[in-house]
Image 1 (tube, rainbow, N blue to C red):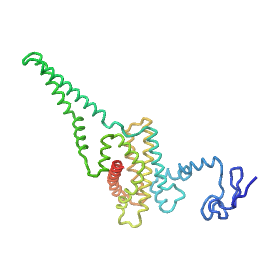
Image 2 (cartoon, rainbow, N blue to C red):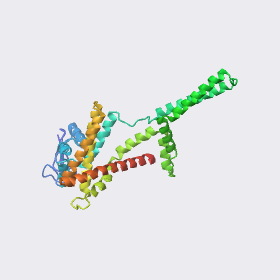
Image 3 (cartoon, one colour):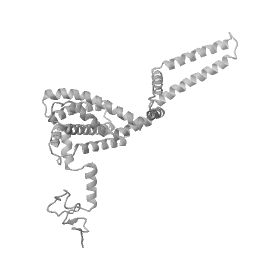
Image 4 (cartoon, one colour):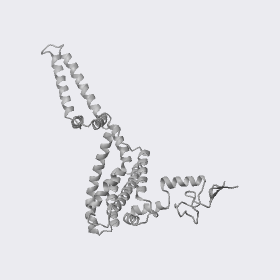
Amino acid sequence: MSTNVEGHLAEADGHTHETACLNCGAQLSGPYCVQCGQHAHLHRTIGALFHDILHGVLHFEGRTWATLPRLAWKPGELTRAYIEGARVRFVSPMAMFLFSVFVMFAVFQIMGIAPPVDTGGAMQAQFHGLEEDLKDQRGNLEKARGFTRPGSPERAEIDKELAANAEEQEKLRAFPSYTREAESEARFNSLHSGWKRLDKGIDKWRQNPGLMLYKLQTSAYKFSWLLIPLSVPFVALLFLWRRRFGLYDHAVFVTYSLAFMSFMGIVLTIASGLGVPSTWLVNIFTFAAVIHIYRHLKGTYELSHRSTVWRWLVLLVFIGVIALLFTMILLFLGLVG
């Protein structure tokens, strides 16, 4: 039994048997609507719902498998093809980047990777505890000394203990970690910008540095997209005299490159959880990243070896500047947020 609903038939088998587009109402003449592009035939089944979840959230489709291998092995060809119009064949750079960031931070949470809650507080407390113990000991010795006669063996013994106590305090204050901690604490406590909101953030950091580091991590996740507008001007500087390449080209290049770095970070994080030494992973990441940037740059902009090399070296320096700027922005947002 079927019911006619506004130009289409809806049946109990979970399928629609339409004669007009279910989205805009235009008459159908093929598998897609000529007005809005929606599929002519739709499914109302639980399987279709799960398919939509995989498609919409994870981009789990043929385009993913067409994009990922090229992103890893032929990034220049992928970027150039996308810029020149191959949009349906590949996942867009922004979708790939956002998905990679989402998965990367999900992996961090699953594997328990988080900023340390104790940022030297235990060591600081231990030093202060030792210092207080020595002060208490000295106070007790001085009281006991007051009850002894000058020149008596008891006073001589107490004087020796007082000298030993003073020597222990000097050793403690000369200990490198104690000195660095005291100097850093003095510098940090002296920070005052004159802007109440910023000073309030500095006070919060001083009181709970572990919480502030956690806020930095969450800010890095929320504002990771800032890396794109930060990076594009630096890439554009490398091609100022080449009018063929515009800001759009640079944005696609940057976004695909950041997506690859995120995916590589995911793989190496999982490898770390499986017990691979961190030194190996750092070396692998560094080597793979610089080689990928070279190949990506050469293929995207169709450069000669010489033109690629000097731009590649300058871009590596720019990456350090971009990372510094991004970190400074995160610090600022963490303090005033």
